[in-house]
Length: 451
Image (cartoon, rainbow, N blue to C red):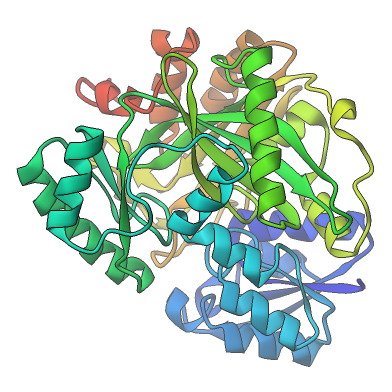
């Protein structure tokens, strides 16, 4: 593998450039007209423009990306996350053009990308799942019948996609009929697939996911869990590893379930098995993300394992260099997503020019960002402009470093979520490790005054 095309943008594209450089692999950046001045374009060995600013006409154009790959004679394509990362057709196109897709097979993506099929797949190997419909639900009457059998509240969930789209909660028959229609409509618009399933809704759970690695030689391991419970509208804000809620016994059982689910999917590469965990430590399969996650750095800092390099080495056919019992959890790590949004104004996006940019540093601090002073944040993409990660020998040290680092982080000219992150990190419930997925809803009922 001599040259890799990076089919993404922003901080993850920059992250892949750096990993490839350390492995002695040349990189090709593809970019939209809006990203000409982006760091990944400047630091890659080569760059090709693939279209206008809108994602639909650039980063989501598989044919343009494949054409760029053929023009530059690349060996492989790394999709990052988002855009085409979980697009089975794109993975299939890469294979058809004899270009290695750095990720799982198209078959695995399809299997785990359809939540109904994924649920049945993991259920067969003994992974706990939430009670609910057997497959997709076609009508409101069918939805009401299932909801009355399993009991309210229930969740209507799109079988395709993610990010909270096509996801609705109902607490009675009337709200179910309304939310069922809305969920299907939203899913159809977002993913081109309006199919939904019905599941029992777990009140105030923890959202805990396990990082998995699987090579081409049927070796499958997990690298422990990440707690992603702090979310706003199903979008993660803060992630940490290990979870303050998970003990050794629960970690062992959940880890074994994650490995079983990954094996059942005939998986290759880095992936994530997501679970919901109730207050009694019962856990249930939620979904599998068949790509690298935004929050992968916390696992890297806890275990010392470079996940992007692992993806590339697996794609090259190399076996995993370590066994399950050799994985060690030496640190505690926390990640705050830094978004160009105004938390004091209903999280309105804040694109524009960064007048001043100063990233924090010091022992136990990592910043993954493509932002810099003078960089113009375009209005066309996700608002995340960076990730701040802190780590230490204990959770308390990681929290102290996070507050210090957030206080040092200076971004002028736009609004960011840094003041919100400081407020969350200072919250007594967060510091006590008591946050569930209900945390942000409760927190924003009486939000602090942001600086």
